[in-house]
Image (cartoon, rainbow, N blue to C red; front, side):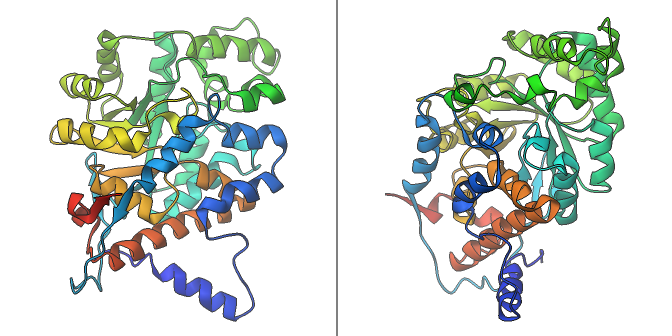
Length: 387
């Protein structure tokens, strides 16, 4: 059987009995408010904020409340197995750390701290192209842990090829291509602060350590960081590709390819026809389009249409173990979690990330158990009722 993640609950109670309660909350829905107290306004708003009025972020969370879990009894769920096969890899649980850039703005440990926490639990961390730390340094922090790489697609094919080659050489096994952020959405939280971390050189370690990108500059990023930043931003924004560009990815990546940002069933079908290995049903956590459909609302139709042809993953709004179960029941193979672990990083670096992940895994394990489900694969539509 799989690891008993729910045992973290007992650890917490025993530590509390000994006079040591958790350093911060175990309720991942409350992390945002507590993170606001430990972060400066610019970094906090960059992580917490969304597009426009925040309607899409609210819709993401409200969508989970429209589904109720239906617990069953006497199913022999004493022992559970959360092991999941995703994109040819066996994971200890159907949870992946979503790509989040510029982690140095919330804690000096940045991406390596997150990588160590994820690797210790056997969960894949998806390293963002907008990382504060180089591809190779984060790989070293991951050690033997699973690691995936997320691409913001540069419009210079040689730079793109160089970055992908570095990721492959550093042991990243899955390529996650974000396609809904070729231009930044209208984000008043960041605009009101006049804050974009990349303009301050945060989240630029991947291009700044890339030999091909550096060869495009008249002066090195160390000599003229402002020009290097602007050159990089112009390289990854402003170009919306079409489906004819997808074969380029296969030419430059040998492992599984996942397209992130799918919200329409027709796009999911095109992705399957294009021969990619997976998709992430996601609206970028509500950061791109105000008033967009909740990601969870889009999931069932998409999973029904293409789930037999590729792996369907889910992202946008995951906060609790019940959320994970609902996403699995609606057709996701696994979920990506983003903001909660970043708030954990802000609270306590590597230990903070580990605490958040262990809380989510424990909640997931116990929720499955108390719903009478013995494995993640047992979660299906008969586990849910529409409210």
